[in-house]
Image: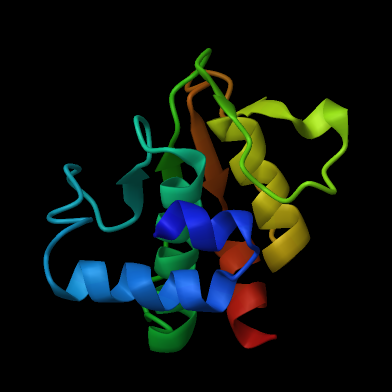
Length: 137
């Protein structure tokens, strides 16, 4: 269902389906990490990782936490996924890593700048200052 909605660029419906899955405890249970500011997306398909990161960012924006921190998405490195966007994608974007996809999505859909730490190549980080500016938009 998430993949179908993703391929059809039905992001609002995809967000609703993913939020329901979280509410039912189907996904993002305990997040497998020590911090609410780190999310492990590695091993997820691009559509599910897209839905998860969108969900997390929308939650941050709607709750406006006072203790805002840098947010880290763990993507892993070296494993390529077939990008499942629409048929209008250029051939250059047909295959990209989850890390590359996430950075592109953050920039184009959320206007959020991110970076890859030199010693954590499988991580995409959004600094808390960038999050704060985005929340206030």
